Length: 226
Image (cartoon, rainbow, N blue to C red):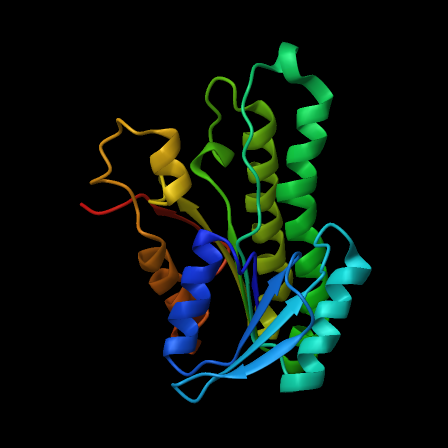
């Protein structure tokens, strides 16, 4: 299951998995009706729209629809999130609540929904997208950094609670991702060190694989090429 499947990173993850013949569930709030498509590699893509990731019942509905089609749910890759900055005294609680809704609450709700079938199967892989500022905030990052810090702590707790169930939980801390939106926002930036969505997707591919079971509870920097 990939949330935020229509976004730059989510789409790259879906493409990476589908190209390997993996059965993929693409979850996006604004997609239309459920759509199951055979792809060229022989895998299967199920698109599920209308899901509110801030609502546990809606997340559980996505899980039930996944199980109805595929009979199992081995991995969650949650790419949903938002970014706002500004000094504390100017933006205050409104920005705080928005960031925790978009980043922390969504991660919590979808994790809670997928953990039941994973625990029943005694197997699972969970990957969230956090941010380096979740470890140490900079100026004008209070709400964003705190919400991403919550994602990191959530990931650590899930890993600790579910190790005996062969369920891993990790999060990735991307550098600046090379997207059309970032290029438009920073037209004079040097983009050579930006990280490609496809490269993050490959890292995620390892983390959700059986071999990825050696890594759990980690916050992994993915800051671009060296």
